[in-house]
Image 1 (spheres, rainbow, N blue to C red):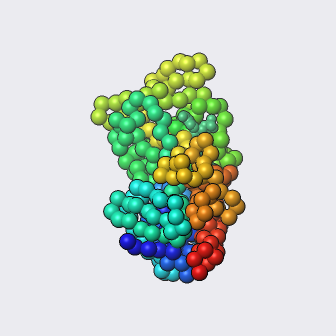
Image 2 (cartoon, rainbow, N blue to C red):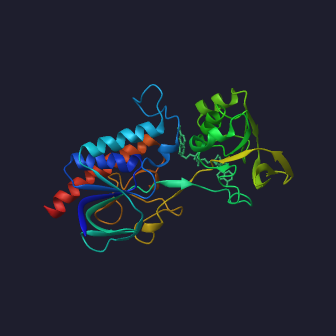
Image 3 (cartoon, rainbow, N blue to C red):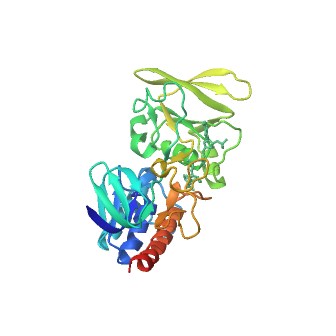
Length: 307
Ligand code: NAP
């Protein structure tokens, strides 16, 4: 069984930043990522609020550099899915789909995934007009009409991004005020390609093979209206990917891991960082900061416990 000083679960900005710090701190470090390195940032086209980033900063570019930087200090990477974590002894065991590992310390940076609307047609038309990633799919909607569901930073920013491709973008929000930060709101309101439908949710998505329309429900009047569209982009928040640690580490009622300010969970030797953690602000910069803090604490922990 392969043994590491530090195993980081999740290869988004939190995990990659933790990897950089842990490797620079001379911990023999492995990052296990189940899908693609970079996490949600890898599907965020514009990342203009990461301090010091380049002229045209994109999520994919920044996370690629983060990974290269960690690798240059010796971090190893594997794509595999963690199936179980045994936290009972000082040296933790991680069982993955393809292998088994031992680690003196674990930094859990499993991130969060897009929340679904949960309406009829959403699953049926996924990849046939329903999308959770504009970076991946915007191109398919060149000169077409799309609906964006949600009113937070993601929905508003992605709606703005989609106007580079689509002919018309309609934001459908369940209230009459956006949650997104004011700067994004102002940009969206000033964009002639974006219009808003307030106090409404998507009741169902319909079409013949591909999305052709949504049925909207006004939450105040309950009235149903048909709205023609070629695509539905869903940005209504995220769900933490913490299932694997349920009943082991302390979480809030939504499944976000509770840590102290050193990113320590209630289990000695297990740290959490990034979007999977209960915190106020979930952005690339706060994920990266969490990772750095977690790794620094993990280095200290390994030194005290095992050396
Ligand atoms: P969010 O801030 O939680 O916003 C989710 C939005 O979806 C809210 O407007 C919410 O409505 C709506 N919503 C939630 N459940 C819904 C449902 N079942 N049906 C319809 N609408 C629903 O999520 P987010 O926009 O994905 O952002 C997540 C985090 O990342 C936030 O902390 C955000 O600030 C951050 N972020 C920051 C940036 C940036 O550039 N600064 C970019 C992207 C994300 P209500 O408003 O009524 O609750």
